[in-house]
Image (cartoon, rainbow, N blue to C red; front, side, top):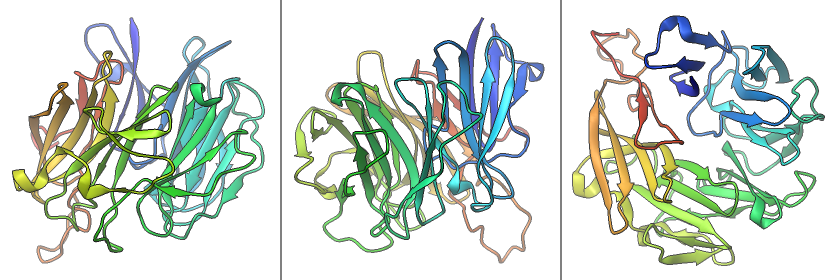
Amino acid sequence: MYKRLLLLSQCIFIIYTISAQRAEDLITIAEDGAWCWFSDPRAVYYKGIHERTYTGFVTSSGDIMVASWDHFSGDEQQTLIYPGLQADDHVNPSLLILPDGRLMVFFSRHGGKLFYATSEKPEEIGRFSNVDSLDLGKMACYTNPVLLRNENNRIYLFFRGGYDWKPSFVTSDDYGKTWSEPKTIVSKKVSNIHNRPYTKIVSDGKSAIHFAFTDGHPRDESFNSIYYLKYEGGSFYDAAGSKMSDLKNLPIVQEKLPRAYDGEAANQRAWIWDIAITGDGRPVIAYTTLPEETSHFYNWGIWTGTEWKNSRICSGGSAFPRFSRPKQERDPEPHYSGGIVLDHNDPYRVYLSRPVNDR
């Protein structure tokens, strides 16, 4: 028997499976919880003295919560980190396990200060330090923390820039006591307030961080493409290993980067959903293509060593969720899909949500 964590739509489950998955095997972690897919990790597994999965979410009242589930005893625990922040799925927390087993939690308003707190004891979420904040601009959003062991446990905190909407980061060498000045990773030559790349991040936790990001939001970019970057040893590289820049010469001009998916050539906009790395170090992306706002398709792409090879998986139906509204009223978020994620232990396997018989 093995365990697999599945995060789709706005529900959080742990699934047990032998050869098939049954509804009876689902264990609900939270009855009232939501998140957006651009703050990660939304859940982490850690085995130390205990074997536990930790996850975070925002409630319908805007409370920032953290939960744990023990794989041996089945014990569950929930802790309130910050009450009434904002009733918005964008404000969900992201999680980082420190080397001693303590849990750091990062979150923000849907545009505003970034907040963070650390559990007082390893592998326990009962008590957290006071919540601290970073004022990084009124548009800051989407927290993505990474710790690199080969850089003396430096923490990189990635986020959407608070002043320019661009992928940005700060670093800490003392587990959040102090932070560097923010830096922007990429920016277009011709840019405006509507140009806001959306980013997914994955790391080996040792030396490398991998990024997949778009031109912007598909509502604003008719040919939304997807780009890839890798950070390692103070420099940024494309998938072929060509150096694009270093930490001292940021931001990188986005137009100079090769495209993992070329929305202009395909004449279809895309939106990134996930990035993972194969056992031999090749990046894999999962994304949607949107030939029409009511027509979503799930796709999978891999760097072969010489080029990006992209394949369509299946139809994702129309926008999700679907609401009844007058015909003349446009769906405010027609580019949201049911969701697709890669299995990070085996990126050749994906999980996705799509309508079957209109369900």
